[in-house]
Length: 457
Image (cartoon, rainbow, N blue to C red):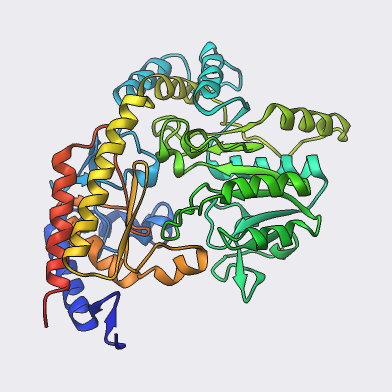
């Protein structure tokens, strides 16, 4: 392969394809363009949250409505939604049970820093769904992970967290480290950080138990913070025995094991932890756990909760540094109860897994048909096509596999054909509301794009 190719595609062909698809997109959405030109200047860099600038289209669409697994923009274009708010709406847009709960609770107040009967039911359902933990409610998984790390440090008296190169745990400062030549370094793109993160974090490669043991053996690691599967980095699956090894090493060296299931809740009812019988000390999940209402939960195993209470009893008076005013509000509890009891069901997960398998197999057939040097990975209802050979073993390989130019062109091409996928790493989700025809339409669109990009010279 010469330098005139990228991910098996001729560079000149990719450039021409990308330019054409961008022009088609822009021409089809004049209302969105006009509205953005008029009103977006009130926001920093034209977007209300800077991640929105990561979408690769010429400009953003403005959403008019979203129901089930479909979005409609103000220009009248309907999109089969496989992004689903980057997992926030993994169970579909406004699941009916959640919408009913919101309407009912809105008549009784939005927040008052006191529990409700629904709070007690939510606690019961969280334990029934995810396992025997002592729960706390947060607003985002970033907050939940931050609080979990504070607990781990309080229990162990140690300063460091072990994270994996290329990991994603929201915007927790400590996790913005990586590896260079085997040495932990701060992530180069981190903005405004003044503390030396290498004093509070150590990075290892996913699937490298020897590296994990070497880091833990120094005795300064309070916790291992990991996703069961690496996401947001071109998906990396755990090798056989990796999670058992992590558990054993954490016990051997006295570090707590924190499992962040914010993305891998796609794995099945109870997340990857419950499906694969993992045994973390602390469990974290956010995004879609309350059906799209901003909510996260973190739970301590009974033994960990006891250790935390011992540490808490010894601390000096004052604020703990954990918790936020709007967390554990009654709207969250209403939505948690509705989601856990009526939406996050075995029947819905069975539907999601079935269609995700159909999508995964369909995309793989298209890749094989066009002899593209790519592969497909699936974790329950979450599917990715990766524009490089696989499987990937760790974060370093995942970073090398990431092909932003190719992914951006494919993304815009799919939107022009009615299919929306996540702007990050070609991620696609199946919801309980997703239909077979939507999956087949996405596979057909993917085939059309590869037919053009991989046509014979």
